[in-house]
Length: 145
Image: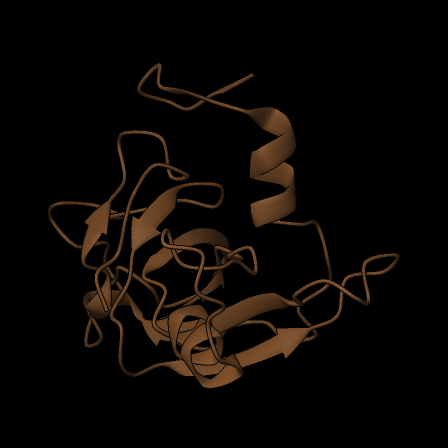
């Protein structure tokens, strides 16, 4: 089990699968944040109906749960003075966030040894676009499409 900064416990194996450790192949510049989107398992509907590939792709890219991987050098700073925002940084590397469904620059990276499974998904967004910091189990957070 894995405990986050708020004492919420998540299954470590599931967490590792949802957010595999892979090189995203990019780092954020300026006031941007690099996040890894949660991977979703391929599945059928609750009624046993097999979901078409288009539906699975939509669910994959509409995912709004992410883990902070890197923070650009100007993130959470006033652009004119480079002083930290009065409220400080909204997130740090390793935090889990809610991110916008639309927007950001998104790409996928295959996970070594898991080529037949879904790839790892990454997104770069502006620091002010962070929606919320997840204080509970990031695996339990549901997004509605």
